[in-house]
Length: 125
Image (cartoon, rainbow, N blue to C red; front, top):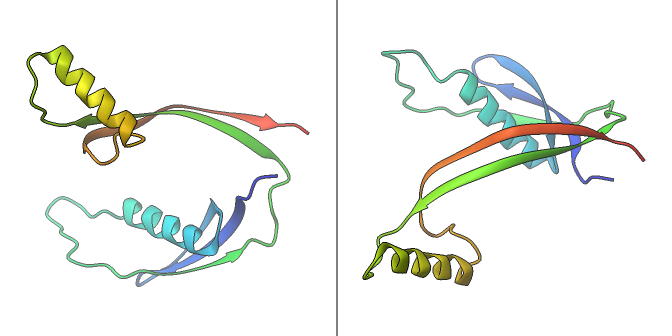
């Protein structure tokens, strides 16, 4: 059984909103709900949001979904680094080695990231 549970999150932002968020904890659910709210109300052309404080309080939802889905996604990151080398092949070899040594490219400049091809399949016991 998954550690993730459904939370009901109440947000206050000079209004009250309710979001249904799947997360592993109340704190994570509240954080995701804030992001959802802020993404939904980014502003309009000519409007700048100079600051925003949003209170979020998450509680475990009374009714939990009875079904689970395994979700698969391809997540692509594009990273860059400037390295000294004698050729592009040598530079690529150095970058590959750095990525292997650091267990991933996460400490290098990320210039793009995207999620593609979400697929969900119900998990049957």
